[in-house]
Image (cartoon, rainbow, N blue to C red; front, side, top):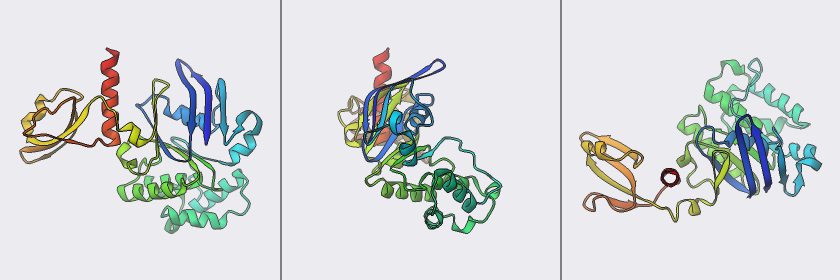
Length: 288
């Protein structure tokens, strides 16, 4: 459990403010547009930066009093992490074990290399690996020492579909009785995996709760139907959330407060990504 109380961080003209927030065990996805404050939030949670005001605690241990102990229990994947490309994945992970004070890490490293599909490349220089393989090495270092708190900034970057599924399955299993936070722009990837959603916009928390709370009590509904391709030209900006064209027809999902054409559209349950579009649309209309 991570608790933030009256936390503030000023970076140039940008200010992140979190009044009172408790993040429980399980996977919580941190969402929001670019520049909203997601990475800054994650860096504060990872103790890579410190708040100008307020307090962050980890299972009641505070940064002010227990920083060394807390850091031993944190795994962090920052955005754009730099790897030592002249090292091999195995040597890099051994080096990271040394930095983290993990004395007996060889068996753990072998297990991580296996879990992330890197055994075949463990003795190959990182410089010669694909971008997806490099990303998996970066992810693997996060879990060294079995940290209680895991902070991941866009972990699925550069991964193909199969790799994404493997990484998400590992994270989902790992999060049992541990606190995992991950930023993402691919909300539907985490459907059925995340147990919490944290929405940050303009440096402020706009929502924190379960996926069920996130997709319920929405101001607009989601409607799906099959329409002529020309229909797409008549849909108002921001109302079309998905389309797939097949010959002269389009399979679409739109958001509206009522059924736009009962002969064509049926209401469907919103995904967590649908709910994001709806909440953003409602936020925009409220600000006018």
